[in-house]
Image (cartoon, rainbow, N blue to C red; front, top):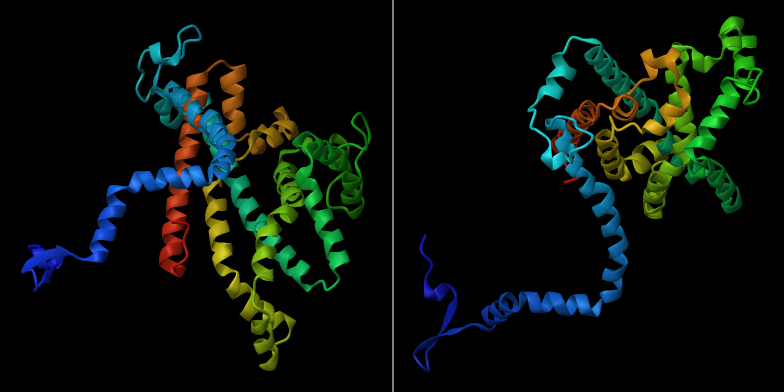
Length: 350
């Protein structure tokens, strides 16, 4: 299909010439002086762009510069030489982790399995809790009572990981940091759910109890804070939707089912995709503070595996390769979840 002059120009019958239309002249001027307009816009709102500099520096130094060290996955580890001068080793570290057949490979697959199980349980049990809390906050009519409940549920998120893990240890393992059983251990022993010997030895020393403790403490820590997004989506629903449902005879449960949940479905899908994206990115701090040699079989994750071999074991290539595979799987999960969400509900992250 060939373009003609008449497609872009208008014919002036009086002069007998083709002239550029006013609209096309404006478009040409905008394209010609595009960067001039961008510069003027930046100068006009220079304060806003100045506020972006700290965030850009954070991403630059803590997100992009560390990517250079990923070259260690493909080079021979040498503490003396920098990464750029180390010899290329190919995929030897990845082969050893995946199909090595030795103790290192078995520990890596155990850590990968534990990472997936902890993340999957956290997604199944932890993701619905903020939605339930947001629905609960929406039904509280008193602003004062709602504010109090929200502050109480938000508070654990603002405590440091060390404080949170210390509280968990005091509740489930010891009455103090030195001796005695915690109140949770005593309650479970009195109910007969755990034996007295297990309670005395400490629940955190038993591999069977590490995952429930980790998941429940994670819900306690983050459910209230994560409910902010869902509560904001709920309060944005038009009151006319509730009024129409009440006219049709809908009670509170019906309003939640047919008004609230469909209205916040897009928010739920977006948050679910982002949660799946970080499915395998378990922070090593909490696990590192809670686990011990007795619970490696259920508590050791990829991050602690990399920390143990990268820092304590001085095997940085192995540690980098483990983290690389963990991040690649996380990226594939994001792409897959986004594709499924886009085809199933026409709501996606991108």
